[in-house]
Image (cartoon, rainbow, N blue to C red; front, side, top):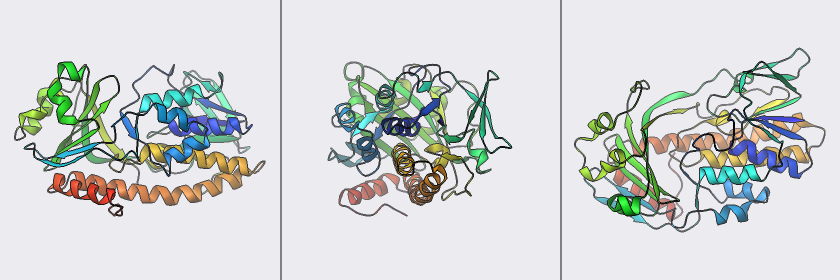
Length: 371
């Protein structure tokens, strides 16, 4: 029995492919149900990584049917509202709501594979070389093979490395705005059909159209990690943007519900560890990075699919499978982490709108990512 900690994208696609291949697998997930918490915003799923993983899982058709038409469009503006780029997209990186993608993966697994409401408090290795997950209710789950798919603050990662995520210096204040076409047509026009980047002088507004006529927006700025205490107010956030055109204010003031603080953390680029028998990591647990290359979800899906392939190709030899998976994962994660760090500096550096627009035009023309 293979035990996966965490029912995120990487853990789910891993379980799906293993189950289809006849391997016994279970997921321990801390959330009490699939719908118990908000899953986040839109994801652009790349052909050679995330989409390839979904093809391997036999789910690409359902994925394609759930994508948002026009969701890969991009607008880049500066603080005055000057438009530096307005691109309708080309369909190569279709956008899907994270919750819709996760729900698709959850539905693809038989009842009983995911144990909901099983929050881990700690993980340890026994003298016999097996691994124990100690749950918050005191129960202990023992397993020969343990895969940490439990995100940024992974309980499994300490078995492999002492490294922990480090604050990048950038924070978001997240807002969700509903019924935008009828109630906020100005914001609907500002954001367009896909993604808005409004960037200048180390600050910005990032926003994306979502299904059900919603916008998810983030006010982004450089600040200390402890900049917020308690509830985040719209006034406090907008005080950081007093020299910006008022056209962006509604991306904060029209929020449905409270603003959500999102400090951005990352693991060191190029993180590696020595093999530890019977345990490995996928997704953010292995290589948490900032969102400024659009790689996190894609890498998680690719990790899950590649690890499943190695396990299925090595029946009876999990150690060989884990070793081959990690060797390849370390290389691709290091490159993506470097691109993400470069993307953060691009978006929050001088003349960010001009620079990002130029980079995106080059990317459309097949140019290499910044390094």
